[in-house]
Length: 182
Image 1 (spheres, rainbow, N blue to C red):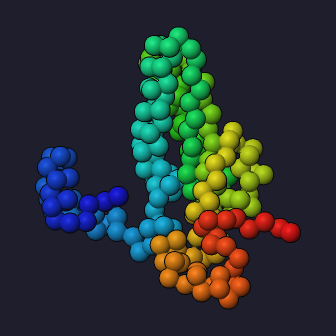
Image 2 (cartoon, one colour):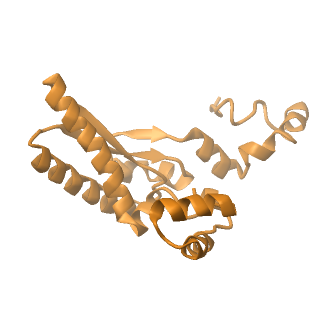
């Protein structure tokens, strides 16, 4: 999500009104070796809670607008991604709840909201009972769950999965069909 080329960095620098060297330096600092398992999802939101607040604010301001125009009480759903511990969810849920209260006060409109999480990691699936203590709903990231459970990259597995199927190692492409106990 960071600019990579000199042209992209130039656009970001211009839009932000900062020197190009500052954008280059920051892009270098944010470089990751493994972006899939790196500084993203809830980890990014915990490190930079203003991102979580900004995203929740956008959802809640939209809910307030719908509530005013439709004369109904909308139900907003906010999903916390890439959670692997209850503590991550609890910390970000506090930011989301504080933002909801602030927007309701500012807008003078009540709305209902639910906070859930995206189960994308095997640990989150194993901890689902604990996560359910705080999460009001779950969504399942089957692509990420498959990649981290099998240790496969969806982008690379196409090179060898046909042979795995032909040799009976897997019955189906795990990105297409979930295992089912027999």
